[in-house]
Image (tube, rainbow, N blue to C red):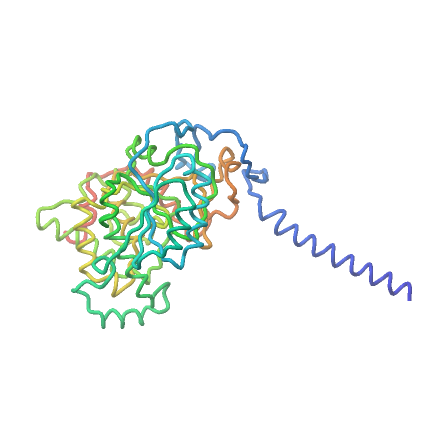
Length: 415
């Protein structure tokens, strides 16, 4: 009896040791470690970490396309830019919104005090207003999105749109009617909403509910963009589901052709000075589905108010792709910015750790990670097949030109 009990105890101890080793393997070793060259280090967030570095380098080690970013001196005793956080959110997303606000206020905005602008296609509840107001010491504004910005335009056949939704039921949000309204609003209307226009904003930072911000930020990204002539900035670059945008690139090219025939050249920059290689090949034959994930987006508001973008959006809108397919605002914004702007007007905010859904960006640089509460080992940047950061880095470093403009590239197949 004693021997049997002793054997049972030994067996239980063996099982316990095995389970502990498994837990250590997954959570103690892989969960928080990242390999730098031949050394394993464990990034640990330290709120008392030394001040932010003066610069950092982006890109896989030993990659010739690495980029060095110079940072401004950390301070909040600087001029303020006319800027705000802009949020499209429902009353039912209150708690997710509070989470997003808590992170941004903690890591950045409690030092800088930028206002919040909330937009909704339904009137905001008193509960939503009271709770979100209590989350910040900054000003808060609340606006209603009316039917002219959220409903169907008169040129859309709603019965056809319903049939097309059914055909797209297997793609992400393929059946969703409200998702299509949201994508159209974010593409063509948030920047001309009466409340947004009344504030005279120069820059905006798009925020969504249920996202996370991980890194302490001791400088003003709005001021950084203004002083460095940046007009568009992103944090995660991603591949779109091609089933949602089968005719988008064709519409983009036909827009360029139609404008050219009318004597308008909306994409005049030398091709090598733009970021067109982020979204297409040398001759502009196809869209590679790369885009900046617009749930994080910092940009000049007047980028979308240009004649070029107004006409670009208008052409895409009338083609029906927002409703007959499921075009997202992310590829629409990204394609236009990549074709219209110079590449040095687009910025990657690598030092802002961020997560949306199951995907996250966390800076891997040793002089940044102690200022962040995320794990760079889980960042999708250069390893996940869904990431387009390699394409972005390659496009930024692409300098070989042949005398063509971006418009010439888009018109190649029509020659």
